[in-house]
Amino acid sequence: MGYDDEDLKILAQVGNYRFGSVTVALTNDKVAVPTHPETNFDEQKFLTLLRGSISLTRDEKWRIIQAIPKLSQFQIDELQKILEEERRKFSELSPKHLLQLQRLEQKHSEDWKDLQAVVVQQGARQEEQQQAEEIRKQLGLS
Image 1 (cartoon, rainbow, N blue to C red):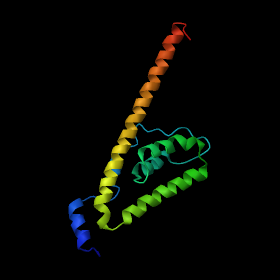
Image 2: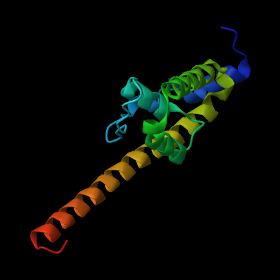
Image 3: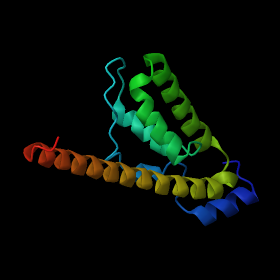
Image 4: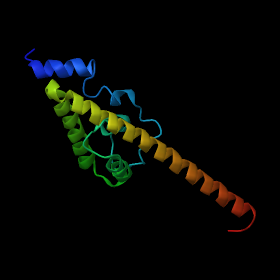
């Protein structure tokens, strides 16, 4: 297969790991794409590509999700192409890089789980605020 000794050593260390195999086990649950009447795209595919990115931080991913309603169709399409290209390029790297990629992917998968938790917390906070507002209305306080 054209592997040198270093490739074989790393392959022995990482076992069955290949780039993308960590984030493929994650889900897009709890991460909702805001409504975007001006654009049309596969939201789940977009989120899957976004969660698999190891070049974007958790906060950058969150900002992208929040910006979706303001993005044009061209911007969405280009962003998707960039994310697909990133995934392809990293998966084509020689095995020498697999250990580093595995660590990066594990860190970014934890970041995605954090982002999911933040979304849940924000939803709970909004629900509490809505309930408090309803109680104020019922009591004639607002």
